Every structure is written in C-alpha cells, then in structure tokens.
Image (cartoon, rainbow, N blue to C red; front, top):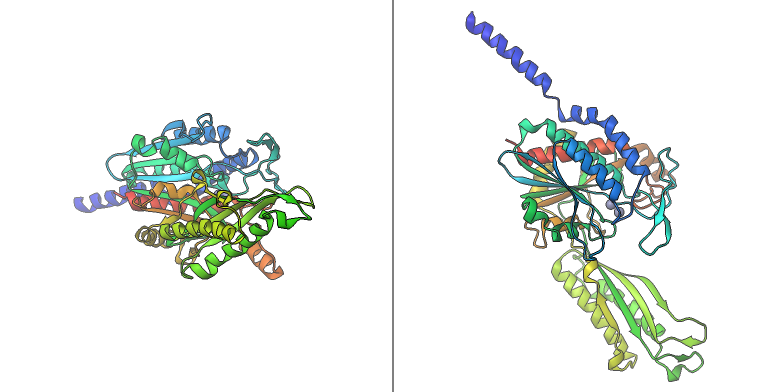
Length: 446
Ligand SMILES: [Zn+2]
Ligand SMILES: [Zn+2]
C-alpha cells in the first residue's frame, strides 16, 4: 500500500516536472511576441556593413539578458581605423563541447519598397560619402531575432545540454570581411575553438515552416578580379598607329567564356562574369587602357587555382596575339582582401541535423536544396581546411500562397536584396529558433 502511494506521488511529481518543462515549440511560441517587436525595431533601423553600432548594442543587450557573458566591439578589420562591431556572447553550462552559433547583423543600401508599416525610411552616407537608403533586404533582421530567441530557449533548456555556446553577432557579411575580422581579432584564441559551427539564412523562395539544407558545398568561393588592358592610344581615325585596348578587351571577354565551356570539367561548377568594363572618353579617341571587374565563382580549391590561372593566361595571351608590347601586357589582380571561401556543409553533420529537424518539424518540412554560386563568409568559421564541421542552413520565409501566385503568373518572387523582399516574420523566426536550438541540443545533449 505504501509502495503504491509512493509511486502515485512519483507520478504526480514527474507530471509536474513535465509541466514545468515546456517543449521547444512552446518556448519559441512564448518568446515570439517580444521577438517580433525586436524584429520590427531592427527592421526599421537598419545599418550598413561596418556601421552596426546600434544593432550590435541591441544584440549585446539581449544576449546579456539571456544569460550570456558578452564582449562588444570585438574584431579587427584590415583597415585599422574601422571599428568592428562584433558581439560575442558566451553561455557556459558545465563540461562539454563548444558550439558556435552565428548571426549576421548588417543591412544593404537598398530603398525599401515593401509597403510594410514597419518599413525602413533610413538614409545614411555610405563609405564614399554618398547619401544612400538602407534596408534589411537580406533578412539579417530575422536572423538576429531567431538568434536571440535561440539564446533565450537554450537558457531555459539548460538542464538538457552541457558545454559552452559561443553566440556570434557578426558585422559586415554583405561587404565581406566581418567573419574574417572576428577571427583576425582572436575569436578562437580568446573564446575557444568550437567543435561545431552553425549558421542560418532565410531563403526567398522556400516556404515558411520549412528548413532547407545542402550537403557538401552550399556556397561558392568568390574571387574579385581586376583586369587593366593596356593599349597604345591615339586618334580614332588612325587605328593603324595605335593598339586598341577596346577591341582587345572584347577578344578577352569572349575568350574568357571558353574557361567554362572548354577548359573546366563540366562536373565542376564555375562562373566567370565580367560585371564592369570602362574605357575611353570620346567617339574619336582610342584610349590607352580599359578596366574590367570580374567575379569568379568556384567550389574546389584546385578548380579555383586553375580558373584564376586561365584568366591571367587568356588576358596576356590575347594581348600577345594583338601585338601589345610585353611591357604593356594586361595587369590581372586577384583581390586577396575580397576573397570569400566556399561554404562546405559537413556531410556527416548535415545528415545528423536533418534527422533531428525531421523529428521536430516533420519530414515534409525539411528540404534538401541545391547549392548556389552565391557567397557567404560563414565559411570562415570552419577554417580553410573545413576542419571545424559546420552547417549553414536555410529558413523558409515565403507564404506558400504567394509562391503559388507568382508561379501561376509566371513571375519571379522578389529575391534576397530586392527592395520588395519581405519575409513573413513570425514563422521565419519561429523555425529559425526551433531549427537552431534543436541542432545545438543534438550536439550538446547530456
Ligand atoms: Zn545578402
Ligand atoms: Zn544575407
């Protein structure tokens, strides 16, 4: 009889313990109203890359309130006068692995045309001193809200995990250099090298409620290349007395297309785009030079080396064919500071997290998505040799009815960076919290 009443007591106790232990979904739901207010606040006060002063202060305040030990203004840019607004929040909970969770914080020089009540009216001066509008057109505001929600959820679920979480509020993702600045500032020396790194990004063509992920390469190596084609200028009426760099540039541009079509293994995706070309001042003057700017996208390091080598060889070879003297060969500069390494989602880690997400969101809400040739400096956290297993996953941000409507009309949905891009905030933030928190719990479970 006694035993029986004890077990009833036990049952009552465990039932009440269960009642005090809300599910991750419930925690996310309970945090959403306040996170939505934070989202709208950040959305209507966007700041450009490298200028995230107010935004980083807000992220720091919220991480502190969620129980993190916070370091502000962390990181070191190559430009010594540029202050770095990195925020690092450390949440310690006994022994166990260290896991890095990253959000980006910067906005873009875009004039918002969403018509939302909380749309941005902000204008500011850019680094060149020009007045520009500012908008969170890439959804980093949603990332920050989900990131804060994740910190709150993990604080509330501390009995389910152990170890150290490093929450990283990263500046200057759009301008590239933010992640690099944090590592250059000693992120891993000071706060410890993580066993895993996790990031997320909203996706402008994935429906709300879904997580999307790619196994292996998900974003490309990004190289910026400047080519100066030198010629010998003169009168437009006497071409025989000149070496025309405009005709030569046209040859080079066409020849560059053969890198993808003839030199590259078709199974290794690459892109060589000439995005800018400037030369000459007037109809009847053959200029001395033409300047071109290229973006080059690859996945594998050896492919990258080959493509960059081919660009150099083709530019110089075309100049030889055009009779340009050796001392006026084209100058080909690969801009080291602007390089972004490819983002590689560790296959084992991806599989492990996909299994978790299928459990928490339902298998129908987890999509394997194609990689893109876009760039993302989240890649920096896994180090050049990908020795820190990392996953950067997508969060659905679009109402399925809107996807259907645009598809029916044969129109493209507003993409990331569009003045009309507007994620549906609640479900985007909610799935961000559930996806990120469940991933961390999987990696740090007791
Ligand atoms: Zn972006
Ligand atoms: Zn972005």
